[in-house]
Length: 192
Image 1 (cartoon, rainbow, N blue to C red):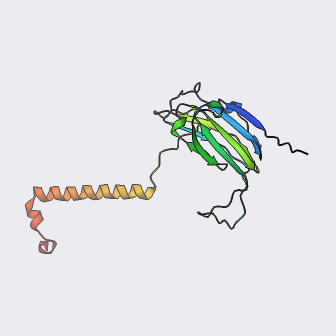
Image 2: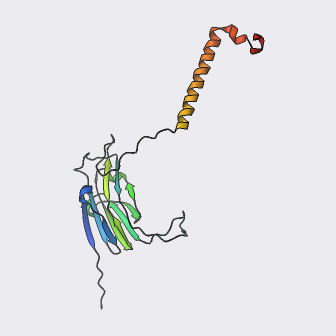
Image 3: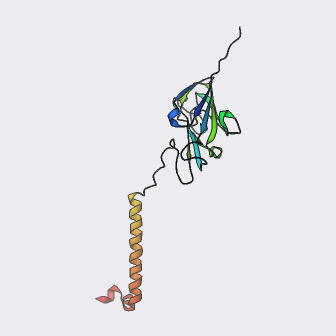
């Protein structure tokens, strides 16, 4: 009796977040995600482009974790591959294990690329989206907001103010010493 192996092959076209939905991917599944931001606002080219996987349900072995950097072994096994064209065509430019959260690659700057995900063991849920950022900082709708500029902590501001006050005081004393040479020669003990 021959065994029949069923492999689910699914192609998902992702043009904007509104059309995407979380997809559960199980062992034996092979999916292709197409990203085409050519009609997005702002349009490509982008100075920074990314694919965010929005991964859920990744299983890892319980501690103790014996990986080289103390990480635990993945129980869900799979592989992401990114290509320069749609439908897994063009040049392969990035390969990563299933636990990919996001990637920023120069080959994505034109806003058109594809990603394949092949699961070998286990099951995960993904909801991949692409986003682009132009040189002037404009972002496509699926990009997370730009982080706010860092705000100095109060101690830093106090230190800067103290330094500025000390510099002004030193300048004032130096100016007084230049304008009245007699004061510079008088010591506190001789003024009694």
